[in-house]
Amino acid sequence: MNNKVAVLGAGSWGNTLALVLANKFNVTMWEFDASLAQLLTKERENKRFLSGILFPETLTVTNNLEEAIKDAFMVVFAVPSFAIRSTAKNAAKLINSEQILVTVTKGLEDKTFLRMSQILDEVIPEKKGVVALSGPTHAEEVSKKMPSTIVAACPNLELAEIVQRSFMTDYLRVYTNEDIAGVELGGAIKNIIAVIAGISDGMGMGDNTKAALMTRGMAEIIRLGKKAGAKEKTFSGLTGM
Image (cartoon, rainbow, N blue to C red):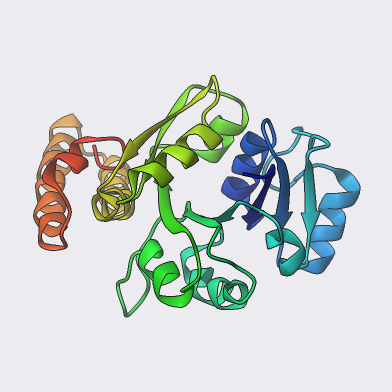
């Protein structure tokens, strides 16, 4: 295994995970906007999303997708869900069978309702495997090294464990799970319940209402997840509850 990781996407979460990985690896972070990539390179700081956190020497920024992916043992997809397919299509010809793909994007694709890992599987035939990384992790808190937990999910547990070791720090604990469907579905669908809980607060409702929304919402998530092939117990974990 070499010492390079590619992170595709320089938003708050992609940049945060690039900083996490830069503790152990040489990280090349790809930004699709050339002018912004130049600015990040010049300022060595993402002032829009992570103001005050300087890039270490082990983190570089590029607008060249090939430069980012070449020689990386792991390629992390951290672009928004609507851009996963197009980014994957552009990256497909650059990725080889020895590279592990990691999706850290929550959501389902519009119209197809595919999970992010399913899109990568469909679009990129040559790869070692796909791991989904998901959990209750706000980027700004992880960037400030507040204790957080996350799950690396893959049917091939060996690949999940490689990702686990790569991302694990003294402030970010990474668990593993073979139920990638449950981890991705929980991470995406629970946000709907979270938004509804916020609306309930805005309407002046109390704890009783929020408790009802959360518990009955979880029951709905579990029923939907099981129909989609997920394991019920996964939704009691970090990406559901």
